[in-house]
Length: 100
Length: 448
Image (cartoon, rainbow over all chains, first blue to last red; front, side, top):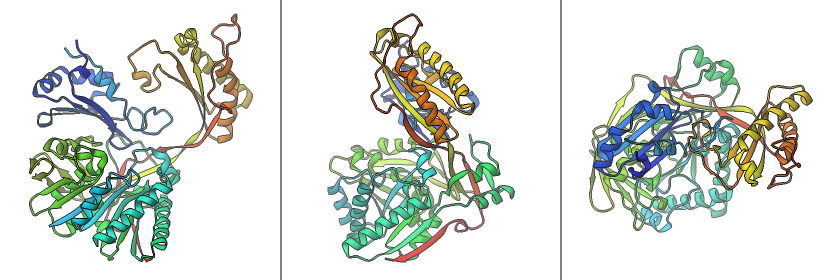
């Protein structure tokens, strides 16, 4: 059960405006892309991010070997409850998901 | 052919000077630079200020004014002063006057403002001309009137109106990041799909290439394609780096909504011309039936006082969560008793445990030390400060058990309380429908 981080080339996250956050998983190769695309269950991702599944957007982009996940920000950027102004750390949650 | 030179991802981030000189020698038709975005948080829009140092901004702006003068082309900045609100635009305008006075030059300066009075937005709401975007908060007339600043994001029409004044320098308030690059090509008849796509790829300068901090990017438009050329030595754009940039800060990598329509890059093709240049074809502009502009607003969401204590004793490090929970309960009860108020919150984030991710953190570990970041949020700065002082002795001395000798923890600062002042929140994620793109923007021309 390897972590996604050990298979992907890079996982990054960033605000997509103050109300959304987006995670880009750069898989690097066809093999890694196929493995991550097929192994990364969207319902598990939603659960790990504590995001209602119907609001999560997922893009599997074979040309770039990228899986992209966008969700409404759990806390709107900059509110008292927000801990991460640029949304930089959320990537780690997906990077640490175990793949089958 | 239309050539746009983008010196850097934002004014304040710098660029490779040799690359900028190449860009000037290549005779661009316009130099475009972004002045900000929402990315640094709501405080800048709330206060109407820039995040970058004035000295850095002035030095870089003076260099770009000189570059545009030597290139013989206009210079355009969008979202001036980080947030693009009126006071931040005025701040950059003052800097512009200073630079002109110091260099003995004159220039025609067009100032485009994007500020929106609350009454206008409330009226538009009542007329059904305000529409929420996905994940927008609920708003009412009170939300709008509580905003310290509201801005609308200008598109190409407003930037072109500013350029049409014959301005040497355009200082724009809030615009979309892309509009300042897309405007001139579209005014010259370039296909809007190509113009907006190039603008999205180029808005961060050389971030779409290797050696991203070199900044300088040249964009050349033809009738059916655009070409991206990073100008620094060793900076290379490839089909991968360029197409991957559509992912950046974008919730949907194929669709980008702009005033008046949407850019669809589903069928765009990226071709390497050589080791450094990429040619792009195939993006499509899909005009929308209504012309809308996005709104941003920020309002005060309370006042904060914060404290930081450091736990190094292994027993306290191991039991930090229980220790913090006990402090919050006791300090909250005491603060209610002492102040007679209950409209405040006390939070302690444990740095080394889960301060970054909070409830989403799934890892545990055995840190050397734990930082206890106390955060008091209250409706007035006085109350936040008062409760911060009340929290101080707990963070300094609170024991895990009544029986043990009183512990003392490390405070890095005196005073321990840091009054942060007002905190702000973004409270609009909506678009406003307009009949005429210029109806909510103002344009002023100064021969300075």
